[in-house]
Image (cartoon, rainbow, N blue to C red; front, side):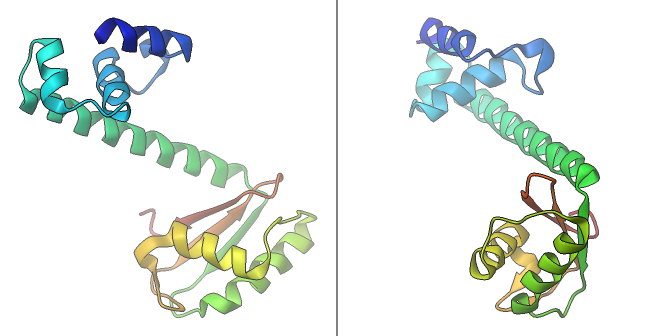
Length: 154
């Protein structure tokens, strides 16, 4: 089992030296993604299920931090940044984004309903019903990709 997952990691180009994951974290995530139980992974690695659980939790946390870092870097590069204050109606967001994109010469490949869904999904609890409850910053990359961040950095 471990040899197979190591082959998979090599095949997809995983290198611990350039990753936010350790070799062990990558192994555990790969096995979990393949449906292997924590108990079976623990047996294969000669460790406890609790240790595998800890390794998996750390790995998922590292992946989330890496995603947040990429989102931050994309937001820095985005030529369009729209601040959306708390209390704004979600239905008003597309026009704000479209206007800012027009000013910057950036095309957004989302209809208004699609853009509202992208913002709502990405903002999570910062959108309650139709209302923005936490200030947001919506970035649009030069390629038209939309990135949503809570203004307070959450």
